[in-house]
Image (cartoon, rainbow, N blue to C red; front, side, top):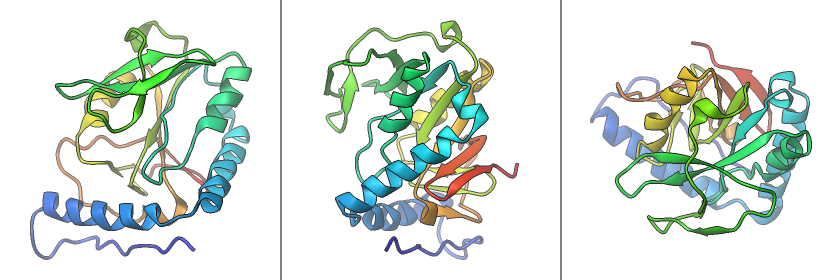
Length: 208
């Protein structure tokens, strides 16, 4: 069973950054302990939730991700969107920080990324402003709170990318395990909230 890690809404000691590091370590350890069956169930549940959402089904461009480190696999969501004719893209890490958006075909070859962590697309970077709308970004999250703030891996890559997607009218959807949706996360000034929370328990608009 995915054991929920308790999150304190008020940090009594230490900085926000150090508290985020602690939470990130604890929550990633919990999700890494999930076995293949539990991860497969979570992926199926998220795909079912997505198929019942008019906003998700209506997207003409979808930015997904390649799951790793116990993240929920959104490959079934991307496959369904592609079958409906949507443009599918994946992120690629820049060496200097930040993410490129790369449009991928159904059988696109993925290669080891510049930072050596995850498989990434090798094609040219795309300008999200040129992609079909409405656009939807599925953002992997270690945790999400009900205001829409997310805890990521700590590099700030998505915090750099999301404002430009939002400026193009894209909807930002944070994805995480249901047990990692909490009331309140510690937040820093650069943290960018999502619009919608997607988990294996359902879809939840952020309470911003």
